[in-house]
Amino acid sequence: MTDLNILVVEDEKFQRELLSELLRKEGYSVYEAENSKCALEIMEKRPIDICILDLKLPDMDGVSLLREMKKRDPEVDIIIITAYGSIETAIDALKSGAEDYLTKPISFEDLLIRLKKIKNKRTLLSENKILKETLKERLKSEDFIFASEKMQEVASLIVRVAKTDSTCVIEGESGVGKEIVANLIHAYSARREFPLVKVNCAAIPETLLESELFGYEKGAFTGAYQRKPGKFEIADGGTIFLDEIGEVPLSVQAKLLRVIQEKEFERLGGLKPVKVDVRIVAATNRRLDELVKKGMFREDLYYRLNVLRIFIPPLRERKEDIPLLIDHFIKKYSLRHKKEIKGITKEARDLLIKYDYPGNVRELENIIERAVVLARGEYITTEDIAGIPSGQRESESLSMRGMIESIEKSMILEALEKNNWIRTKAASFLGLSERMLRYKMKKYKIEKEDLDNQR
Ligand SMILES: Nc1ncnc2c1ncn2[C@@H]1O[C@H](COP(=O)(O)OP(=O)(O)OP(=O)(O)O)[C@@H](O)[C@H]1O
Ligand SMILES: [Mg+2]
Image (cartoon, rainbow, N blue to C red; front, side):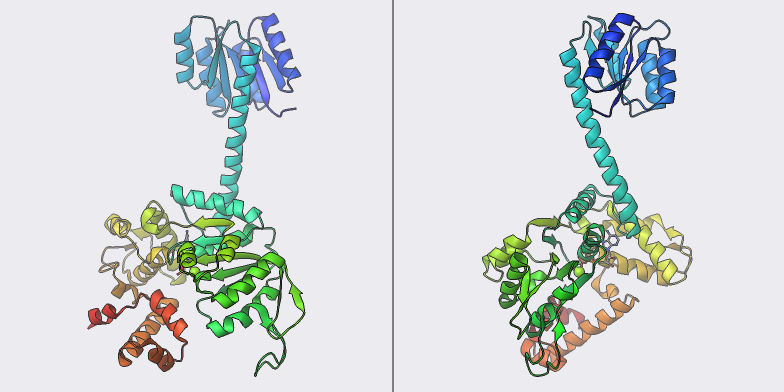
């Protein structure tokens, strides 16, 4: 049985009834019309998916009827039937929007093949439509903005990945939106009622990462006064987001592998295995395959994690997204800072489109926030983004996070300078682990020349 409605428009009674009967036997719901008036009436009453239309009709020429039908329902697929030898009319009809044509006498087999083709096309289209609609509806509500083809692909991948329960790695440069994507995967998954627990593996000192992830038993080490559950236990039933997975030390990697394979682990100092049901979504701005080659990342873990992969392209490779993002951030920040900004001048917009955003969407967001705060008129002008984009300006961003980050960056620079760029010394000066310092230096792109430039 098929759920397609077919309309047969043919003035010769015998032909029409024969064709309709054959189609009904194939499982189609078939409606018959002997002229164009009747055909249009049927179309008004019920949705017709496919119309088989004899171009030679008593009351209206077939091509005009075809146009009328398409006007009423642009999605109806029309197969026309022409008399042998009238190829020009057929071409005319195809130009007017017919999907296919057959010449008389028609071979029923031929017709069935064409119907099947149309049917496949329609299923595909409707799947796409449903996908797009759910995507639009739901992604919009999450403030996930995109227009580019590349991000449309990412978006449909998100939906597909969310439906599965496999581990998944999100790759992309800093600030491209890896965390948002992880949120979306969880939000669309069957696990959405359960927690999404986030762990930034680079920001937690190596020695603490294991107990953070897997918890510990009372007395596991000095200071372990009572049992503490790890993030995996907290995430039970839900999703764990392992950010910067490339920074996980090899010792912890082994334990991660075991959770993936056996869905169990032991707390630090514990003997009894703890069972959990957690989906792992990991993110990295490094190339895991290269870390594997360097021996810094276990190959078996890499393959276990990389079952599904979502790569988010850098913003400069999908500039079509920039205008939408600009508008989105203007709205967001004029609300937040209670300013009535209506938009942005064309010059300013063009400037922002030209820039290549090493810090990706986060950088654009900071630029807009700052511009919204600075803007004196109703529109953001080139003046409000003047000098931007440059790292210097960026650190002047007025957002809390931006402020903290810029303070942190200058503290790190100062510590490094005071300690002759010896990282171990600078780290203990700051009270950070060396690994954490390395991470932060990378995050803020601090290199020795940086300091020289600032002088
Ligand atoms: N498509 C998007 N629509 C709206 N906002 C976005 C989009 N992509 C990124 N952002 C915003 O940009 C900022 C950075 O995104 P996010 O934190 O997800 O990036 P990231 O890839 O995890 O960065 P990092 O590697 O530095 O951790 C966030 O404030 C986020 O809301
Ligand atoms: Mg992130």
